[in-house]
View 1 (cartoon, rainbow over the protein chains, first blue to last red):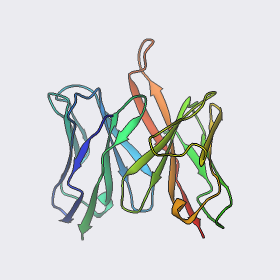
View 2: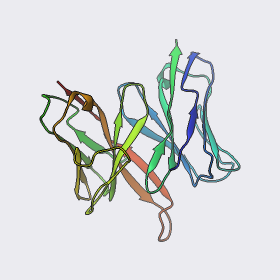
View 3: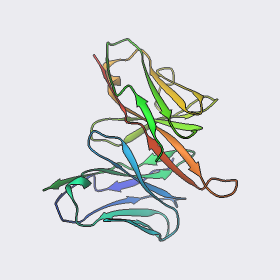
View 4: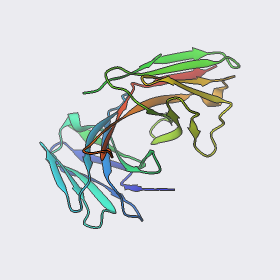
Length: 109
Length: 122
């Protein structure tokens, strides 16, 4: 079935540093979604990317979809303590969403 | 945004008992809901896809007789963990799919998650 690799598994940064997580698939994707899960909470939808080479921004978050639609990244500029959590990408399988392993971001204030 | 209500938030039960978890989409109709299981510091593992008015589709390795799913209406899906054992202790999360788009084929989708249920089996 559809699989997606997400790296890194963990990332610890100093507050103010940037952060990036990557998702890679061996097959071409129809779209990719990103979710954030705060510690003790549930996943919350962040964005969906559909077009090849698409770049979307949400304040300090930048989402990219690769030209070949096989990879995607989420970049956070100048992290803040509120960014702490696990970020998951999700790809479309057969009528279901398959999640990457997640990247857990921790921040030193 | 859309809201999905899941309850109970946590439950402690004795080994051998059954536990029912409810997932409701509060302001949209969801023909499809999903049930996930999440162990500490791990990703969401899809257990089954719940389809309104039909049988659920279970992922490989998930026992359908152990985890009973009912999706009787467009706004409610239930997961019953039957004869629970300590190894069933986990965080269970549901999600409901909201579809939208132009024309006849929806081209966009978004999952809204419930707040999760922490199950502890003694």
